[in-house]
Length: 394
Image (cartoon, rainbow, N blue to C red; front, side):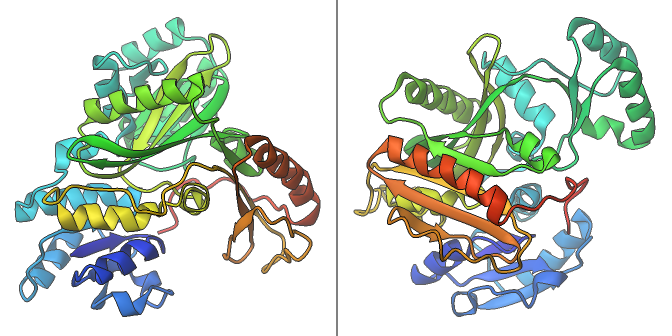
């Protein structure tokens, strides 16, 4: 198994792959060669330049393949999905190739594909032809969102308040403007559905509602929170049904997926925002493991190894509790959580200069109450803010 990683994540994936007998070669960026990877689960760690081009990565992987016979290529992060697809095409491996991978990386591609399938999406346009851009600005009132087509989270997103500001931004972006998508700003509440898929069928799904939208958190210096949607509610049913339509339309047949939706404030309808063919970030997987008894990373490893050759079954630890998560940048290098003693706390975020807790309970109201109270306490005890990132830090 050749595993691609631009960030330190997916440790449980690597451990499970090793436990299943996989010989794992990890190809990561130079700055992470000495990171705290689970070395016992990795046969070898290889490096590439932090800013390596796709062609350079293909050449590096091809060099490794001279003396190693790879059977699987797996990306652990959004930024590795396109690279993995290109490598699969190069080696003629099965799995997501270039065209399907674009549906999970390119915001313009995923919106276009979803819209053709009749899935509600915010109004959008590519930034190619200026007459088409003008038509969009006349048809869709400001503000608008100017987003990188291939990025993750809120990185590089610009909120544009009027047409004059838009054309200034487009001019500043120069030859990079066609790599952006212009989108209607849709006020509302953001949700995410995290999924495991086998043979094109959803085997596990978990729906959660964010507190403040991730864009507002990243650009306004806020605190990220998310809480399980009540089980069996109409809200959950709508999200699950729409998520399955998205997965089918975009061609996701195996592995993990993280899909984001927004419920429009004006009409109360759900709209598809974006999707990643990977496990959700920001410790969402830790919250889901605490509340649902399923580690998405480990299950994804099983799905990749089995390749649909054996029927997939959820682990015996699977359960239906409610989860809540709160994460913030912290002014302390190592935040002190000694005052946070509620028995529902199941996970504490370990990163430096980050404060975070995941809770789980069979009582939805208790989870809501805890996360809301922690949000106020975090602001007093830990919270710090930095400017939003303009580009990935690799």
